[in-house]
Each structure stands twice: as structure tokens, then as C-alpha cells.
Image 1: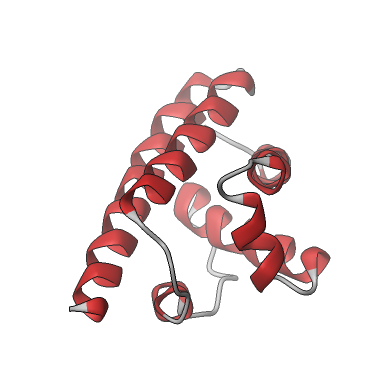
Image 2 (image 1 turned 90 degrees about the horizontal axis):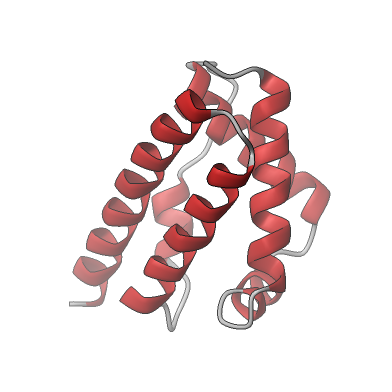
Length: 118
């Protein structure tokens, strides 16, 4: 379905796009201090989601709950950019799985974010 190199390409292409985005870029730039380390962590996360590897260690939902000012439009934008990236990579099986996983991630994060904010 996808190789580790496919995952690396996806993560780097997507986050380059997200960082350049007028809506999402400022959020990422305000909260990520070490991009190489963050990208490595994200590769581990998406490798776990797409390939079943077990390298990822962390609590991504909890980390995102600390951020202020996120809204539904931002989650929708994140998902749209993710889908745009997967579509451009030319790996249809990976695209389908990655898009499904991204939808779950976005829905989970948004629901928990709303719950945490009351």
C-alpha cells in the first residue's frame, strides 16, 4: 500500500503546504519550535497510522488541547490540504487510507477540543 518513503513524502509535502497556508501557517509557526524534530514525530505518527509501525510515542490529542483559538474551519482547512496533498502523490491505495485516517484524526481532535472548551 505504501512504503516508509511514501509516508515521509506525504508528511513533508503536507506540512510544507500547511505552513504556507494563510489560515494554518501562523498557528503552526507559533507553536512548533523545532521543525525537523516535529516532522520526524509526524512521520512516526503517520507511519503508525498507515503502515502499522509502532515507533510513535506521544499524546497528540492532549497536546492539541492546549492550543487556543482553533475552530471548525481550521480543522476543515487542515483536512482539505491533506486531501489535496494525498491526491497529488499518485498512490491511490495510500490516498484512500490516508484520507480516511485524516478524517478520523480531524473529527476526534475537533470533538475533544470542543469538549475541553465546554
